[in-house]
Image 1 (cartoon, one colour):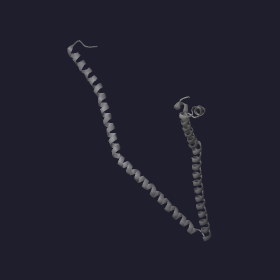
Image 2 (cartoon, helix red, strand yellow):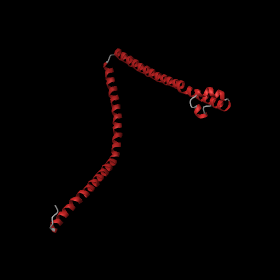
Image 3 (cartoon, one colour):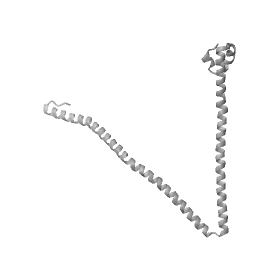
Image 4 (cartoon, rainbow, N blue to C red):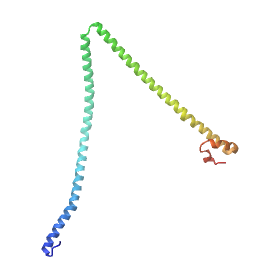
Length: 172
């Protein structure tokens, strides 16, 4: 309720004005603060981008070094194992290792041949089911074109069997 006394009415008006100003400009302040925060986050991300790239490179290098160290450790363990073996055991171990390498190479060759064979089969199928029908269609369309301008009776016989021929050259 609005007071009738002018001084009380002035105080109520000032309070309402403060509330209205705070609600309107408070929202603006919140939005401005959010924009500033987002700009700050974006700037921090841009600044950290170089560090992130550097860390990725370091991780890749560490991975490579770890693989090298593991390979050296495996080689050292194999050497230690071979030294503990008798000469007959060493010879058997080397023969088994060579046989495993040959089997792996043979398997890789089989897989490569199977891939090549599959690619050749796909090429042949695409030729049979796509290439040859397209060539035959274009030849038939060319024949219909020739008959459309020279021999209308032959055109009427062939045109219904060639797609889009009657659309291009007319029904009769």
